[in-house]
Image (cartoon, rainbow, N blue to C red; front, side):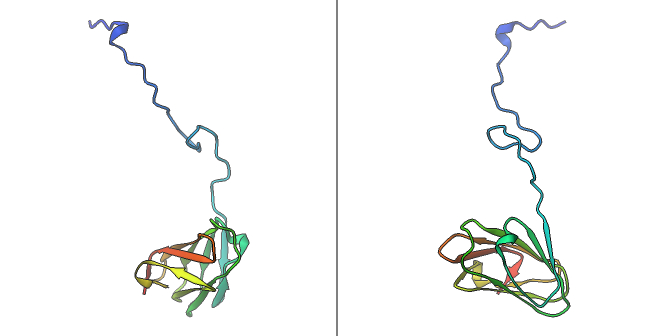
Length: 128
């Protein structure tokens, strides 16, 4: 039998998080994103799309426009659900790696983030 002395114990002061909690241990509610299903060949992002997933489902090419005037920090995830390739443009400035503006293939997903001053960043499964 092993005897453990209290002096052999180490107090674990590491915070333990579980479930839907933020860094301070506060509960986070409503962490799921609503779906906005679009079936046309054109779509302009709207204020109501903030923190949502927009599916773009058409067999023909789809033109997606990121408009001016939305809140700084606005972000939307887009999914090319149908066969039609999505081409992204912005009313003012669009920034992406290697000037990528098109989805790669059906089921490609990407996120658009508005960082203020009408500058949009896109990242994800996109190509030039």
